[in-house]
Length: 188
Image (cartoon, rainbow, N blue to C red; front, side, top):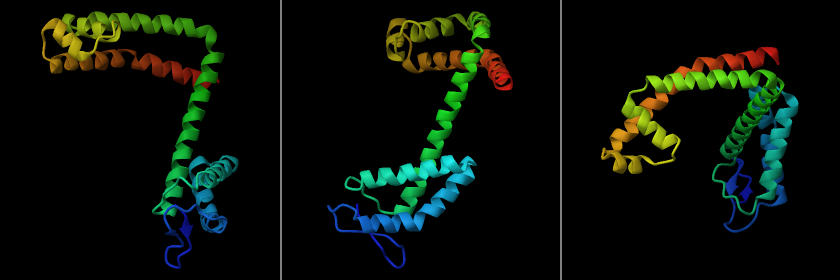
């Protein structure tokens, strides 16, 4: 929704159905760019990334000015910058992990073997009913209600067994995965 300057708030929704004017956009840009940029720098600690995030936000705001309805532009802008910062860090983490794993490729099969061994060992320690339910769910793709029907058990019991199996399996492999990621981080 378009926005007009207001002496108290700087922005007030304009008439419904009309697009944000160039002047309104310039006011929003001028009054908020520096604060958004400073906020982005405080979170990313990188001037180039901060500038890119804020500029991309304003480009997006201009391109979508006809579809947007914004009650509080300043809150909208800060929330959008925060979300873009989160996206930036997610991409960075996945990129770093991909790079580390590619460079650690010779050791990766060994890691997978050890992980599989730990997984098999942990599966062997599960109670039989829990193991059977988990295998039906995760390896045969059956839903909790389907398993409940098949084994003549309440669905809540099936969900409980799946949750317990996941908890124990995650616990069994957590240290190995953490160690692998730490080693990848140290080496690369």
